[in-house]
Image (spheres, rainbow, N blue to C red):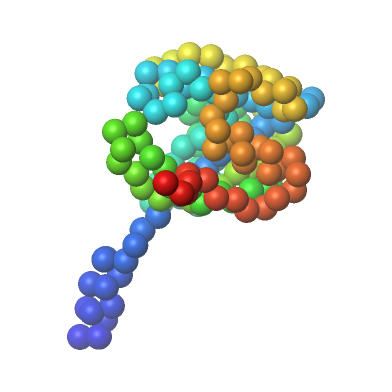
Length: 161
C-alpha cells in the first residue's frame, strides 16, 4: 500500500515543461529563426528550440531539434550547457505554464543550414551575436546576454503586476 500512495502523490506533484535551445555560434554569428504562423512570438527571431520528449535526454533533444528545424547535425559531445532559465511562459490568450529552459552552446556542426519547418519559421539567418535584430524574442535575448556575460541562471516572466 505505501507504494500506491507514493504514485498517487507523485501524479499530483507540480510538473514543469523542459525546453531546449541551441545557441550555434559560427564566426561570431548566431543562428536564428524568425517565428511565423505559430501564434506565439510570430515575427520575432529565436534560436532553434523545442520541447523535451519523454524518452530523450536534453542533449538528445537539442540534437534532434537541430536536425528537424535547420538540417544540421551536432554531436552531443560538442554541446555545452551555458544557461538555465526558469520562466513563466505566458501565451497570447493569457494562459501560462512554467518552463525550465536549457541553453546549449556549440561552434561545431555539419550539414547545410536550411529551414525545414517553413510552416513555423519564415527566415533562417545568422546575425552578429553582439548586434541581434530589434525583433528578437525578449526571453531568448536575455539568455544570450547571460551567456555572453557568464551568468549561469536567470528567471523571466515574473514581473510584478
